[in-house]
Image 1 (cartoon, rainbow, N blue to C red):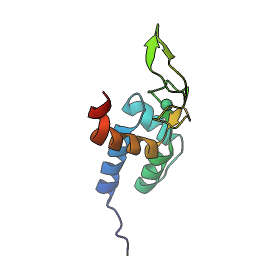
Image 2 (tube, protein in one colour; image 1 turned 90 degrees about the horizontal axis):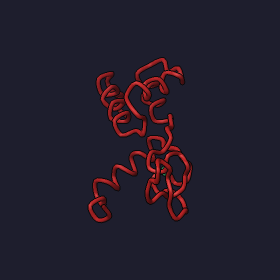
Image 3 (cartoon, rainbow, N blue to C red; image 1 turned 180 degrees about the vertical axis):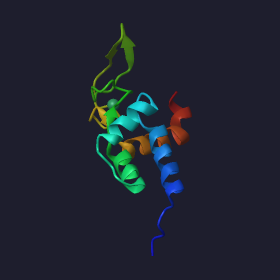
Length: 109
Ligand SMILES: [Zn+2]
């Protein structure tokens, strides 16, 4: 039997999702979640998992970027590994990327 999460646990989960999202800041994230019109704390968490934001790694282009030149992303092309070429990330992407950063980032940067 699944135990119901308390409101406090749901709020903590919401904050965790928000902190790893690609949203520019918390207000932007909250506004996107509220636009989905959630009614309950659990609804807020579900909405938080669904919202997507432009991928900051590829500036929303979905293409692999190696460097910025005069503010424009340039690179050899290919698919952005952060968002899988979608140009946007949801919480599943953010989670996968955070795992990657925590375990492998030192090998590539
Ligand atoms: Zn991307």
